Structures are given as structure tokens and as C-alpha cells.
Length: 157
Image (tube, rainbow, N blue to C red; front, side, top):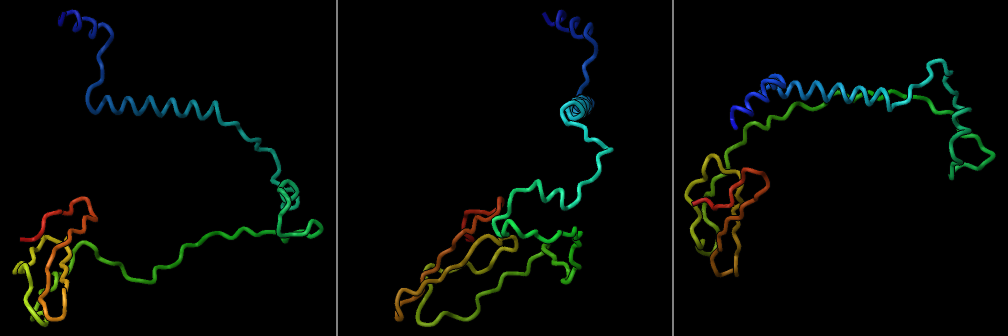
């Protein structure tokens, strides 16, 4: 049966493989899209004179903000010009080091103890310190941000 498939394939011609196949599919798709665009899109008459504002205003529906006896002023075409760059570029490829906890929090101990150091590659966690009462200590927790695809849900140990 394998030999019959091989003979049938060689009779119908070689099939494009790999990257050549993708290029062939893209070329056929582009040719079909071009043919459809030429057939389906009506061609405009190049000899038609452009309409003036008065002619085009007559074809528009009545404006609810203008009285029917008032003719709105003619509109001018103002080209859009992008504003000039006023600020320097911001570099988002590096981040500053996370601050270290120095000193102690007033009135009590922290439970559980926070990690001694912050790993260099972790920017996806928030340290939270909650004070239960004025005389008690502080409760420490880590909240994962989970904002980006690569953020980890595990706390810093």
C-alpha cells in the first residue's frame, strides 16, 4: 500500500515542502485576494469632478444644532501634524534595586520573620505589614502581583 501511495504522489507531481509550501500558499492567497478585490470593488469614475462644499452639504442630513435657514460655515481641511517630542525617552529595560528594610517597626515584633534579602530577579511580589493593635507586633505577608505572564505565585523564602 505504501508503494501505491508513492506512485500516486509522483504522478500528480512533487508537492512543495516546508518553507516552500508556506510561500506557495501565501502566493496563491495573495493572487486570490487581488482577483476578488478587482472583481468586487466597483471602479470609480476618474472623470467625475470633485464636489464642492455646497454640493456635499446638500446631500448631508439636516444638522440638529443649526436652524434650517442657517447655512453652516464651510469646513477647511487641516492636516494633522504630530506634536514634537518634549520629553526624553524612558529606559524600561532595567529596574532599580528593591529597597531594603532598615531599622525596626515600632512597638513589637514581626511575625513571621520577613526574608533576609530580596532576590535580584523578583519584581512581582508585595510585602505587607499589618499592625493588629498599638501594643501588639506586626503581621507580615507576601502578596504576589500576578500582573505579567512570567510572574510567580510563590512567596520569597
